[in-house]
Structures are given as structure tokens and as C-alpha cells.
Length: 143
Length: 143
DNA sequence: TATTATTGCATAGCTTGCTATTCAAGTGTA
DNA sequence: TACACTTGAATAGCAAGCTATGCAATAATA
Image (cartoon, rainbow over all chains, first blue to last red; front, side, top):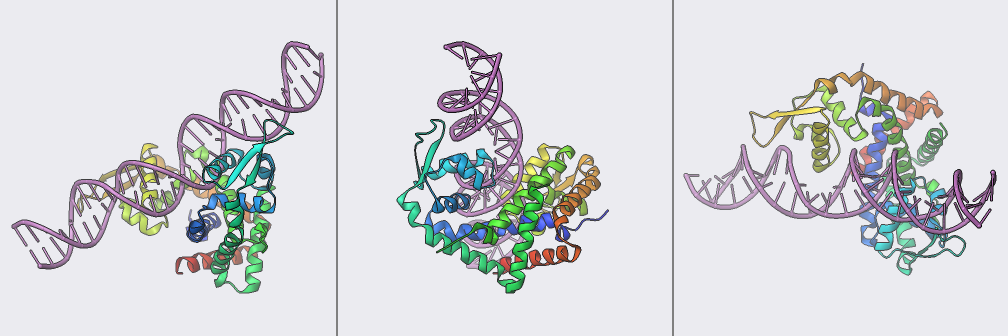
């Protein structure tokens, strides 16, 4: 049998993801945040004062992964946690001032990385590429 | 400003890569190998008896990442290392019988994961998707 | 030839992801 | 009400990625 990595979707996807992550890392390092915190911040910038469970419903990572990321974010002064009056097992997660202030710069960094990475594609190709990715993602998730 | 993760290429790429990796992991676990070893095995199935440097030239990961992966592969009985007569700093890396025997099953697993993941796309769409990924990868790498 | 620079790898230490397990708090039921 | 079940989160332990640094062997040069 024959197998060429350049013809393997999985190989390309993995490679591309590492390149994207490395790029974003470089762009956001000056803000004092790291890539794994990005998805969490995106949700909290939309709405904070939520539980870990709420976040988990919006981010497709395992619960343990999120718990660890939140611990590092607390350590780094990006979030604070308060008691949840409704349920003593859960806590409410809040952005600190510091983290709230980073929003626009972070958005901008991500946009820059995205548009730089996709600059080899024409505008319609970009749209198609995004569409393909969304379809592949939901295809795998629903299989 | 506004930012929607579903419209962020980086977000989608990362998500897709984790889904692919998880799928492949499940498929190859019965073979006794794990995803990080896959790129190394692909190269060694083509040609073994090479140095770490040779491998590094063919796989786009950092040298330290490769060194650690090779250590785990040796621990797991997938590779053996012998002295390099030409240079005492380097060693030659060889597949074990066990690892050599896995080739066809591993190829098949990867093919299955790929085709299952891309089954939501038509044949021409798949080709286009692969083309986009290759272009994006080389675009980022050469920037 | 002795010293300096380069090269091939290894190691330390971190993040981000995973699975599996544990634990305390809340819920439901005999 | 007591017991069992469920649920929210934490923890342990591993893989795979990264950067930074160290070290011994080789190569280059004063």
C-alpha cells in the first residue's frame, strides 16, 4: 500500500493547526495571555459571571482541560471566582479588569493572524475554506 | 469590535485538528501506537537507519519534540538506535520488527479516518480543501 | 596544533490536550 | 428521613507540543 502525508487530510490539518497556534502565540504573548486561554476569554468577553459548566457547554474541550486552564488563568490574574449562591459545588467565573481590558487588542491579534494566514486564498476561496471546515467539524462531531 | 469564533479560521483549524487527532487515536490505539508517533513512523516506513537530523528535516516539529517522541518510541519497542559510524554524536534509528509489521494496518486506519472525516464533502470539494490547506501551510511557513 | 565555533541531541520546564478517578453537594426516592 | 444516584469540579497522570539551555563531538581557523 501507499501513503503520502501531503495527501493525508489529517496530517495537513494537524500541521496547519500547529502553525496557526504558533503564530497566534507570538501575536498575543505581549498581552500576557496564551493560546489555550483564548477560547475561554472569547466566551467570557461575551458574558462572565458564569459557571464552569456554562463555559464547557460553549467550548469543545474536556472538563478536565477547562478546569486546568481556568486554574492557570486565575493564577495569572485573568479571572476571579466567587461563590455561586444557587449551588455550592459550582463557582461563578469573572474576568478581572486586566483581562477585560485586553479584549480589543486580542480580537485584533486574532484577526491579523487569520487574515495573514488566509492571504494566499482569494476572498471566495476563503469563504469556501471556512465552509468546508465547518462542515467537516460538524460531520465528525455527529458521527 | 466584534469577534465570532465560528468565523475565525484559527478557531476552526484548532477544533478540526483536535477532532481528527481524537479519531485517529481511537483507530490506532489497538495497534499500540499513538498519534504523535505517526509522523515518525510514516518516515521510517519509507526509510529507516537514519539520524534524528534526517527525520527532523522531513517532519515540521521542533527538535526537542522529536527527541522526546523518539524516546517514548524506544521505550515502547517501536524503534532501536545504533551507533553511527560516521558521527559519534548522532545515532541511527531503526524500526523494530513489531513497528515494521504495523505499516499496512496503520495506513488503513489513517485512510479510514481521513475518508470518514471528509465524507461530508464531494470529491471535487475534497480536492479543493486539500489544495487550500497545502497553500495555507506553505503560505504561513514562508511568511 | 590549540582554540573557537558549530552541530546533533538531550534535558528542564512549561502549556494544552486527553482519560480516568475521586469527592462533595445536590436530587430523588423507598 | 436515610440512602442511593447524579452532577459539578478537582486531581492524577500521561502525550505532544513549545522555548531555552546544556553538552559532547566535530569542524574550522588563528
